[in-house]
Image: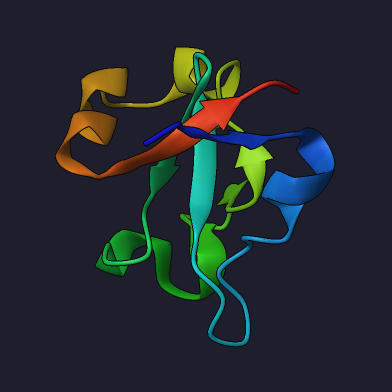
Length: 79
């Protein structure tokens, strides 16, 4: 099965609002964070939002990017 490709526009549809899944991109991968209580309604700590590329934001996070490895990869991010 071929990996689903996400552009900036298609990723934005997965914002975690109104029952939609909460996806984020990081280093070219797209992760499904829908099951995380930390991403309720597509928001994390009132600073980060689902449906976006968080690659640059992770440089300033208080945790390592490997936290994302706890979530399913649902595709690749092409920007």
